[in-house]
Image (cartoon, rainbow, N blue to C red; front, side, top):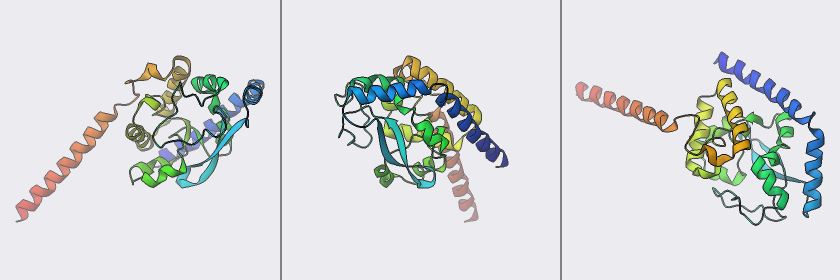
Amino acid sequence: MEGKKIQRSIKRTMDIVISLVVLIPFLLIWVTIAILVKVTSKGPIFFLQDRPGLNKQIFKVYKYRTMKPGSDVMVKGQEVKKDDDRITYIGKFLRRSKLDEIPQILNVLKGEMSLVGPRPERIASLVDYDDEISKRLDMRPGMTGLAQVSGNIHLSLKDRYKLDVYYIENYSLWLDLKIIMRTIGVVVLGEDRYLDKSLVNIKHEYNEVAATKEEAVSIEEDSSNRSE
């Protein structure tokens, strides 16, 4: 337990240091992107939306706006596809390169998000959370995460939740580092390149858990039968 606390403290320090390294030296690029968003389509520069974070605390997530005004009504579990006509011209590039997420560095510096963690969902999604899925809220949401480097929008919502919960239950700085490195690959090569190439064998983990539970039930039943 103490080791986990130390790792989380190091994680927070890394969040701050890496965010400042990304934000300050490349500030001119971020300002240029903001100008392009403004001059190429009507609407605000940034897209802000309430999202649940650590322990369900609500915060406003920041993104460069990539869609036409009034296009933020989404269907739960259905992501915006590449050819969605609601996406602006510059928005297609920003979404493909993941640069639309850069403003979330401000969320990271404020302590509302982390560089790595489960992606923050819409508040409406909380209605369907059971005890298992709610584990996603035991850590700060991330700019990138295990599900985002394992197929992301090509995965079912159920599989993304499984990967998020796996990350929470098996968190380590080494896993964070692997996710960050894979994120670079996703940005350069695209999400399609990593289909069926998850960083973890989630099916194997769940099969082990199921086998352990089945064995425990078997032992309990055997013990009960002997007592009779």
